[in-house]
Length: 152
Ligand SMILES: N[C@@H](CCC(=O)N[C@@H](CS)C(=O)NCC(=O)O)C(=O)O
Image 1 (cartoon, rainbow, N blue to C red):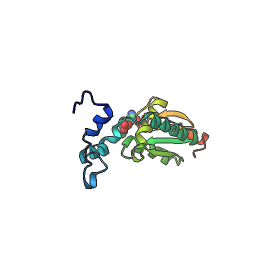
Image 2: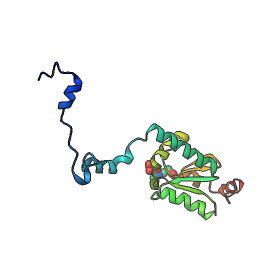
Image 3: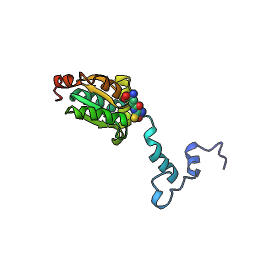
Image 4: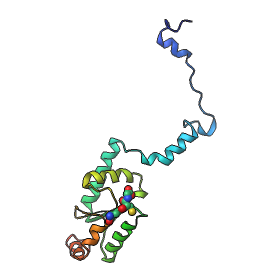
């Protein structure tokens, strides 16, 4: 057979299809790739659609709650901010970005919204306060502010 003169459709017929992996891994390309995806998938940049959804979600959380703390459960600065708000008996909404699937996309969205990427990322009545050091810096006026926005 002369492959140079053969129509392309016919050549395809001779191409050897890869045989599916047997048994348990027949749906994934290889166990190694599968586990690497599980391990490092969260570091991949969110798709434009995921990014847009995350931005809408972040903005809604900011718009619909008097006090929002975007946080990570293991972050000591976040613990300090949540501790200060709790000590003032404030009602606040916490979003633990390390415990939700779209946390990393929301963190990217927050950077776009406020220019701040670190956590805690705190909003009071839609105003961007900043991080823990910014919250601690307004400690003296915070009780009054929380009262004004109806969080105490
Ligand atoms: N000066 C900041 C420090 C905040 C900070 O460094 N947070 C760490 C977590 S403990 C952070 O956001 N690291 C980057 C990340 O988790 O993506 C503040 O007072 O809030």
